[in-house]
Image (cartoon, rainbow over all chains, first blue to last red; front, side, top):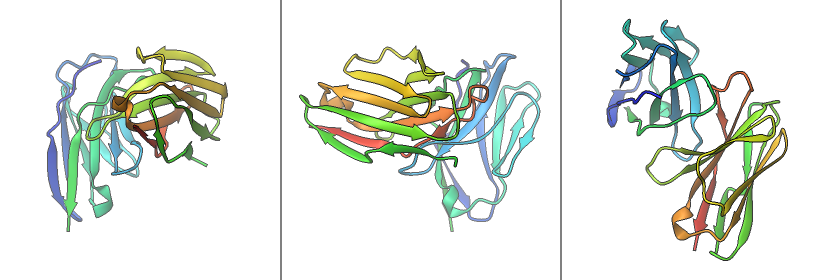
Amino acid sequence: DAKTTQPPSMDCAEGRAANLPCNHSTISGNEYVYWYRQIHSQGPQYIIHGLKNNETNEMASLIITEDRKSSTLILPHATLRDTAVYYCIVRVDGNKLVFGAGTILRVKS
Amino acid sequence: DTEVTQTPKHLVMGMTNKKSLKCEQHMGHRAMYWYKQKAKKPPELMFVYSYEKLSINESVPSRFSPECPNSSLLNLHLHALQPEDSALYLCASSQGNRDYEQYFGPGTRLTVT
Protein backbone atom coordinates (compact mmCIF):
# COMPACT_ATOMS: atom_id res chain seq x y z
CA ASP A 1 0.00 0.00 0.00
CA ALA A 2 1.16 3.51 -0.80
CA LYS A 3 2.56 5.68 1.98
CA THR A 4 0.62 8.80 2.99
CA THR A 5 1.87 12.08 4.42
CA GLN A 6 -0.35 14.37 6.47
CA PRO A 7 0.40 17.48 8.53
CA PRO A 8 0.58 16.58 12.23
CA SER A 9 -1.97 19.20 13.29
CA MET A 10 -4.28 21.92 12.01
CA ASP A 11 -6.58 24.49 13.54
CA CYS A 12 -9.90 25.62 12.12
CA ALA A 13 -12.43 28.22 13.25
CA GLU A 14 -15.88 26.93 14.07
CA GLY A 15 -18.27 27.37 11.14
CA ARG A 16 -15.49 27.60 8.59
CA ALA A 17 -14.45 24.91 6.13
CA ALA A 18 -11.70 22.57 7.28
CA ASN A 19 -9.43 21.43 4.46
CA LEU A 20 -7.23 18.49 5.40
CA PRO A 21 -4.49 17.59 2.88
CA CYS A 22 -2.93 14.21 2.23
CA ASN A 23 -0.01 13.38 -0.04
CA HIS A 24 0.17 9.92 -1.58
CA SER A 25 2.63 10.35 -4.42
CA THR A 26 3.31 6.61 -4.83
CA ILE A 27 -0.34 5.64 -5.20
CA SER A 28 -0.99 3.03 -7.84
CA GLY A 29 -3.90 2.84 -10.23
CA ASN A 30 -5.97 0.37 -8.24
CA GLU A 31 -5.52 1.96 -4.83
CA TYR A 32 -8.35 3.84 -3.17
CA VAL A 33 -8.09 6.82 -0.82
CA TYR A 34 -9.97 6.41 2.46
CA TRP A 35 -10.57 8.84 5.27
CA TYR A 36 -11.38 7.93 8.85
CA ARG A 37 -11.46 10.03 11.97
CA GLN A 38 -11.10 9.25 15.65
CA ILE A 39 -12.71 11.48 18.22
CA HIS A 40 -11.11 11.31 21.66
CA SER A 41 -12.03 8.17 23.61
CA GLN A 42 -13.94 6.68 20.68
CA GLY A 43 -13.19 4.14 17.98
CA PRO A 44 -12.34 5.36 14.47
CA GLN A 45 -15.22 6.36 12.20
CA TYR A 46 -15.35 5.95 8.43
CA ILE A 47 -15.86 9.26 6.62
CA ILE A 48 -15.49 8.82 2.87
CA HIS A 49 -13.44 7.13 0.14
CA GLY A 50 -12.67 7.57 -3.55
CA LEU A 51 -10.63 6.26 -6.45
CA LYS A 52 -10.22 9.14 -8.89
CA ASN A 53 -13.43 11.12 -8.96
CA ASN A 54 -14.37 13.68 -6.34
CA GLU A 55 -16.83 12.34 -3.82
CA THR A 56 -19.32 13.94 -1.45
CA ASN A 57 -21.51 12.53 1.28
CA GLU A 58 -23.36 13.90 4.27
CA MET A 59 -20.18 14.23 6.30
CA ALA A 60 -17.56 15.55 3.90
CA SER A 61 -16.18 16.01 0.41
CA LEU A 62 -13.11 14.34 -0.99
CA ILE A 63 -11.14 16.07 -3.72
CA ILE A 64 -8.52 13.94 -5.50
CA THR A 65 -6.06 15.63 -7.85
CA GLU A 66 -6.03 14.53 -11.46
CA ASP A 67 -2.66 12.76 -11.07
CA ARG A 68 -4.02 11.17 -7.85
CA LYS A 69 -0.86 12.05 -5.95
CA SER A 70 -2.72 14.05 -3.34
CA SER A 71 -6.18 14.59 -1.95
CA THR A 72 -8.06 16.94 0.34
CA LEU A 73 -10.82 16.14 2.79
CA ILE A 74 -13.21 19.04 3.21
CA LEU A 75 -15.52 19.47 6.19
CA PRO A 76 -17.70 22.31 4.88
CA HIS A 77 -18.80 23.83 8.18
CA ALA A 78 -16.61 22.57 10.99
CA THR A 79 -18.09 22.32 14.48
CA LEU A 80 -16.43 21.70 17.83
CA ARG A 81 -17.53 18.08 17.57
CA ASP A 82 -15.31 17.67 14.50
CA THR A 83 -12.21 17.99 16.68
CA ALA A 84 -10.48 14.64 16.12
CA VAL A 85 -7.55 12.83 14.55
CA TYR A 86 -8.14 12.43 10.81
CA TYR A 87 -6.49 9.52 9.03
CA CYS A 88 -5.85 9.31 5.30
CA ILE A 89 -5.34 5.71 4.16
CA VAL A 90 -4.43 4.41 0.73
CA ARG A 91 -4.87 0.77 -0.13
CA VAL A 92 -6.06 -1.72 -2.71
CA ASP A 93 -9.48 -3.19 -2.22
CA GLY A 94 -9.56 -5.60 0.63
CA ASN A 95 -10.12 -5.56 4.35
CA LYS A 96 -6.77 -4.49 5.75
CA LEU A 97 -6.56 -0.88 6.96
CA VAL A 98 -3.12 0.54 7.79
CA PHE A 99 -3.44 3.77 9.78
CA GLY A 100 -0.72 6.41 9.58
CA ALA A 101 -0.06 9.11 12.15
CA GLY A 102 -2.97 11.27 10.97
CA THR A 103 -3.74 14.96 11.43
CA ILE A 104 -5.05 16.34 14.71
CA LEU A 105 -7.77 18.84 13.76
CA ARG A 106 -8.67 21.33 16.45
CA VAL A 107 -11.85 23.30 15.81
CA LYS A 108 -11.91 26.46 17.89
CA SER A 109 -14.79 28.77 18.79
CA ASP B 1 -28.53 -0.89 14.53
CA THR B 2 -25.08 0.29 13.41
CA GLU B 3 -23.36 -0.38 16.70
CA VAL B 4 -20.40 -2.51 17.65
CA THR B 5 -20.35 -3.19 21.37
CA GLN B 6 -17.33 -4.18 23.40
CA THR B 7 -17.09 -5.47 26.94
CA PRO B 8 -15.65 -4.73 29.35
CA LYS B 9 -14.90 -1.03 28.92
CA HIS B 10 -11.92 -1.25 31.25
CA LEU B 11 -9.89 -4.24 32.39
CA VAL B 12 -6.99 -4.50 34.81
CA MET B 13 -5.21 -7.83 34.90
CA GLY B 14 -2.06 -9.30 36.32
CA MET B 15 0.55 -10.98 34.21
CA THR B 16 -0.55 -14.45 35.33
CA ASN B 17 -4.26 -13.89 34.74
CA LYS B 18 -6.44 -15.20 31.94
CA LYS B 19 -9.14 -12.86 30.68
CA SER B 20 -11.25 -12.35 27.57
CA LEU B 21 -12.46 -9.35 25.64
CA LYS B 22 -15.79 -9.58 23.89
CA CYS B 23 -17.12 -7.86 20.79
CA GLU B 24 -20.60 -8.09 19.30
CA GLN B 25 -22.36 -6.70 16.23
CA HIS B 26 -25.84 -7.28 14.84
CA MET B 27 -25.44 -5.64 11.45
CA GLY B 28 -25.05 -8.92 9.58
CA HIS B 29 -21.40 -8.12 8.88
CA ARG B 30 -19.24 -11.05 7.85
CA ALA B 31 -15.82 -9.61 8.61
CA MET B 32 -14.60 -8.75 12.09
CA TYR B 33 -11.31 -7.25 13.27
CA TRP B 34 -9.16 -6.71 16.32
CA TYR B 35 -6.91 -3.65 16.52
CA LYS B 36 -4.51 -2.53 19.22
CA GLN B 37 -3.93 1.16 19.93
CA LYS B 38 -1.21 2.50 22.20
CA ALA B 39 -1.53 6.00 23.62
CA LYS B 40 -1.09 8.77 21.03
CA LYS B 41 -0.49 6.19 18.27
CA PRO B 42 -2.70 5.03 15.40
CA PRO B 43 -4.59 1.72 15.61
CA GLU B 44 -2.65 -1.35 14.48
CA LEU B 45 -4.38 -4.34 12.95
CA MET B 46 -4.01 -7.61 14.86
CA PHE B 47 -6.49 -10.11 13.40
CA VAL B 48 -9.16 -10.35 10.71
CA TYR B 49 -11.95 -12.90 10.60
CA SER B 50 -13.81 -13.30 7.35
CA TYR B 51 -16.92 -15.49 7.33
CA GLU B 52 -15.91 -16.81 10.76
CA LYS B 53 -12.49 -17.94 9.57
CA LEU B 54 -9.23 -16.31 10.56
CA SER B 55 -7.92 -14.68 7.40
CA ILE B 56 -5.21 -12.34 8.71
CA ASN B 57 -2.91 -12.66 11.74
CA GLU B 58 -0.43 -9.79 11.81
CA SER B 59 2.24 -11.88 13.56
CA VAL B 60 0.58 -11.32 16.92
CA PRO B 61 2.17 -13.15 19.91
CA SER B 62 0.37 -16.32 20.96
CA ARG B 63 -0.56 -14.81 24.33
CA PHE B 64 -3.37 -13.19 22.30
CA SER B 65 -5.83 -15.79 21.02
CA PRO B 66 -8.80 -14.71 18.90
CA GLU B 67 -12.02 -16.65 18.56
CA CYS B 68 -15.07 -16.13 16.38
CA PRO B 69 -17.86 -18.38 17.77
CA ASN B 70 -20.40 -17.07 15.25
CA SER B 71 -20.84 -14.28 12.75
CA SER B 72 -21.96 -11.79 15.44
CA LEU B 73 -19.37 -12.45 18.11
CA LEU B 74 -15.63 -11.98 18.35
CA ASN B 75 -13.53 -12.75 21.39
CA LEU B 76 -9.93 -12.05 22.25
CA HIS B 77 -8.52 -14.38 24.90
CA LEU B 78 -5.60 -13.01 26.89
CA HIS B 79 -3.05 -15.04 28.82
CA ALA B 80 0.32 -14.24 30.37
CA LEU B 81 0.34 -10.69 29.09
CA GLN B 82 3.14 -8.21 29.65
CA PRO B 83 2.85 -4.62 30.91
CA GLU B 84 3.68 -3.40 27.40
CA ASP B 85 0.46 -5.01 26.19
CA SER B 86 -1.48 -2.31 28.02
CA ALA B 87 -3.44 -0.48 25.34
CA LEU B 88 -6.88 0.23 23.92
CA TYR B 89 -8.20 -2.84 22.10
CA LEU B 90 -10.62 -1.98 19.33
CA CYS B 91 -13.02 -4.29 17.57
CA ALA B 92 -14.47 -3.50 14.16
CA SER B 93 -16.76 -5.13 11.64
CA SER B 94 -17.60 -4.70 7.97
CA GLN B 95 -19.80 -6.22 5.32
CA GLY B 96 -18.04 -8.86 3.31
CA ASN B 97 -18.19 -6.75 0.16
CA ARG B 98 -17.78 -3.23 1.65
CA ASP B 99 -14.66 -3.68 3.72
CA TYR B 100 -13.57 -0.08 3.28
CA GLU B 101 -16.35 0.93 5.67
CA GLN B 102 -15.42 -0.59 8.97
CA TYR B 103 -17.54 0.10 12.02
CA PHE B 104 -15.53 0.36 15.22
CA GLY B 105 -16.55 -0.24 18.79
CA PRO B 106 -15.48 2.10 21.61
CA GLY B 107 -12.71 -0.23 22.69
CA THR B 108 -11.58 -1.93 25.89
CA ARG B 109 -8.92 -0.11 27.88
CA LEU B 110 -6.57 -2.83 29.13
CA THR B 111 -4.01 -2.34 31.86
CA VAL B 112 -1.57 -5.15 32.65
CA THR B 113 0.05 -4.91 36.07
